[in-house]
Image (cartoon, rainbow, N blue to C red; front, side, top):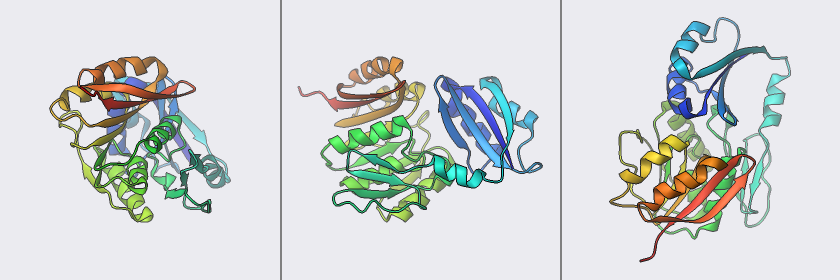
Length: 272
């Protein structure tokens, strides 16, 4: 078994991922590496994308391409990598092969990491979940760039309704729909291009995205800003800039989480 990994500049990660998924439509593994993002696919020789095609797809964003031979125990090792996460003693996010926590007051969220679109274990997702737990659920919620759907599923479990999850990538939408069904919650999953379309209007918005896309959102929600917005996917050094951008549409920072190099923001509509 071969692991083929492509590391790209973080600022170009979303565009590179869209191109790479055309070569690997079943999804890729995503690993955050600080200023870089690594996308990896697994397969036997002859099944993986050709290196020239891979480099052409990712374009100038490519920093490094690496192939690694994986041992026979790679499946068990991969499963050990995806450990359950307990968030604020309220949400237990776990892969399907682990047992429920079985604790009163804790909602179980089952996310299949085979889809490779976020399981809740990364710091940015975990911090977004922590901030969601702090908010009193009220009315609608939109999860922008939903990936696996973990934030939308958590919102539905916590009491928001209706909940809508949007993403551009077809593989992400497929993963989100499968996870929504596995968790037996009501979430409308739809395709949307947040670079060209206005985001869905909702009382609460969760946006675990990268800095460039987050900075594009405020002008598009100026006419109908949410009451509350959770913004993740940020490096610590980017948090102030993003908070200032949302302040222009009346959303003031009311909370912040930091873990390692990462940050997440809680923004609320200013009372006037």
